[in-house]
Structures are given as structure tokens and as C-alpha cells.
Length: 243
Ligand code: TYD
Image (cartoon, rainbow, N blue to C red; front, side, top):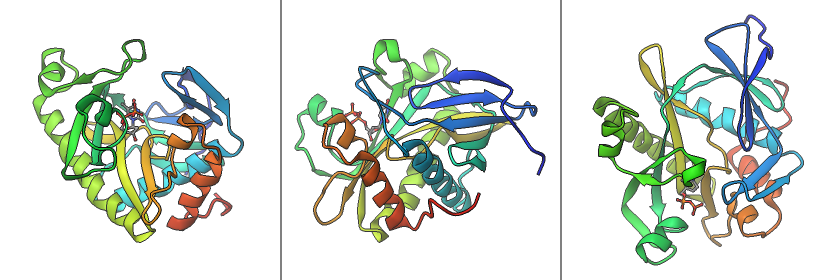
């Protein structure tokens, strides 16, 4: 495998930075220890989080690839970095919810913790200044953020991910409550991009319903990285294996 290294910072997000490489088709994602919530109002450095999320993301993306879902992930580069395909990102977030909590409960007044059958799906616009407003298919079409075919593919793949990951987490005694995915275009194909980590999903212990995700940070419950490591441990992700 040809070695790739950072050439130039392309973008610095709230928890990850993206770098170009010598290869125009590859980028480097650097998972930082920065942890943010409430549109960046609350920011802290959490020791080990970058490494745990990088390892965890690689594990999940490899599982999804194995299940036939195309992903951006290419390979682990270092403890906190991965090499990924360079995508043309679609500026929307796809959220699936298996259990009602968070903004859904506030918005619709449904009971917190209610099982959702069938699971529900929402689109949000990626726009921090506007606080990621909820949008619908027509907004996406009207403003040209994605085509009708891409909308249908994003929904299909997001639900396919739900099937794979609810089973994976269930076997490890966790409930996948909800999660957010982002997609991009790569050589004519729609591909799962960004990350899948406890920063962008909710995971509860199946028995106690204890939170094992970023809600620990949002709600000041403490033990954030410890919870992420517990999730990794339960899934059999080896955080110390050689790259
Ligand atoms: P949601 O309940 O809408 O967000 P919150 O209550 O945190 O305002 O989010 C549903 C799930 O999607 C949750 O696991 C967090 C994730 N998510 C993100 O990671 N980023 C986002 O911008 C959005 C809208 C959701």
C-alpha cells in the first residue's frame, strides 16, 4: 500500500480535522480529543477519545462494508488517524430513531424512552449557523442538495445500517437508540461518509438503560471516554492491537 501523509488541512470540524494527501482520491481524518455539544457552546478535551473513536469507527465501517454497504473508510493510519476516500459530501444528515428521546421528544411531546415501530427517519441540514434545521425530501430536491435517486439511496442505506448495527449492539447487550449518518459521492456511487462513533449516536445498556454515548457529556454525567471504551470492549474492538 502506497504511504499517504498529510499535505494540507482542508477543514477542521468540531471533533475531527480533514487533510488532503498526495493522492487526490484519499483524505486523512484526524479524530481529535475535542468534544463539543450544543452547537459548540460546550467544548472539552477528553483524553483518549480521539483514539477510541478512530478505532471504533474503523471497526464499525469494516462491519458495514462486510454487509455490503459502501463506506468512505480505507484503512487505519495511526492511533488517531484514518485514510478515507475523498467524497463530494451531501450537506444533509440522515437520522434513524429506534427509541424516542432527545429533540424528537421535545418537538413532538412523545414519551421519552418509547419504542418506535417502525423506526422513524429524519433529514437535517448540515448548517451550524442555522442549528441544523430539520428538512424534508422536497427541500433537498428544491435546493439541489441531492437528487431524488440519491434521497432514496440514502434512506435505503441508512435503514440497512440500522439492521446491521441494531443486531450487532443487541448481541453486546446494548440498545441502538438513534444515530446520524452522512453520505457523499465517490466515482458515481453514493457512499457512507463521516463517522459512526458514540459521538453521533445514542447507545443504552440493554438492562439498565444507562447511557453509553455523548449524552454523558451533554448532560455532565462524567465517565464519557470510559463509557466509549466499555462500548468498544463489549463489541470486541481491540483498542491496543497493532495498526
Ligand atoms: P437528536 O435527538 O435530534 O439530537 P439532540 O437531542 O442531541 O439535539 O439526534 C438524534 C441522533 O442523531 C443523536 O444520536 C445525535 C445524532 N445527531 C448528531 O450527532 N448530530 C446532529 O447534528 C444531529 C441532528 C443528530
